[in-house]
Length: 432
Image 1: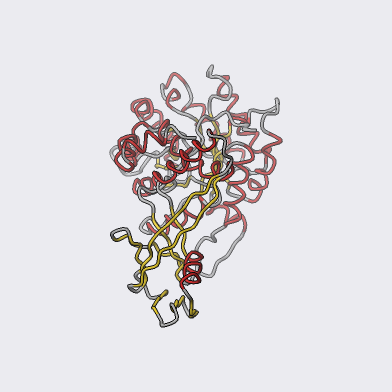
Image 2: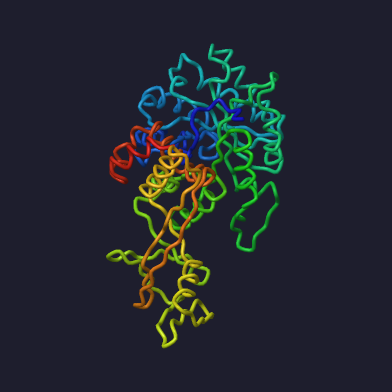
């Protein structure tokens, strides 16, 4: 049961911007720049950040800047707008200041709330603390004549108490005593989480916290919400950012915090299927993408070698050397190879299965075949994969993501057509 009232099924990008910058003629300059982002540079969720990204003495001015910029340009922003306000589970004064800023920003007389989708609440604690924030939202909505639940609430998981609170969401959401069904995003906040857990690493780097990311993804799935990973602060490490996203996506966490428009572009594209399919080879524990040359998949590396012998073939992977005949070699290579399907591949397979199902078949075999070249030696390999309803449903996730993006981000239509081709886009919108 999806207990959330939110219409979006996926969020790829969560982009924060300081609301007021000291020492500038226009303290709202970064907000004005961010609200003008379009296409792949524009996030699914934009977070004018009136908490950590803004100096404490600038936050009142930051709240006013949010009002001014969103009232003026928010109608044209292609994503959702969710300002982050101050909050703290152990400090009633901080909670009240956050409440004041929500009330001010959401005042219809200030002309910003019609373009604001909700607010982000940091530093929440146990479930009672989440309910306090929810009650403040309800008060603001009633005070300003807004529909109850019209402002969504996203929270940042930054301590053990809030991590445990996620386990109670299914039973708490929808009770008549609260409006927690307004919840939208569950966002990891690894920096403060590390502090709360009193964690120490030899280098001072943040621990990876795979358990937190798994727990957040699981809680979001159980409660019908959306999970978003925390910031990746080495903004020059593009490959590290991609690796983090791939790891998250395998946990069902398809969204990530983005700190720059460049990271937004990477995160917007990362969960979408690639334009071209490609083969991966497990080269002694390291996955290597094969280069396609005239229909042949070529490995050019030193971790795997292949040569012909009088009796067959000699395959070396790392320190392991094997003498194999042709059939044994093909089986060994199939164990090392995997295929990453393109958008076109996925759509083709789904269309084929839908046609087979229409004809009364419950399962069909799909063949993947390639010619692989290692050290000049070419080998033809193929495998059959059975497609049934479960396989079809699993492969539907990237297509559902694409369809959600296409419906919610018309500013990205041209980018998507350029990436995949208009025919593939049209077909992808019609399967599933």
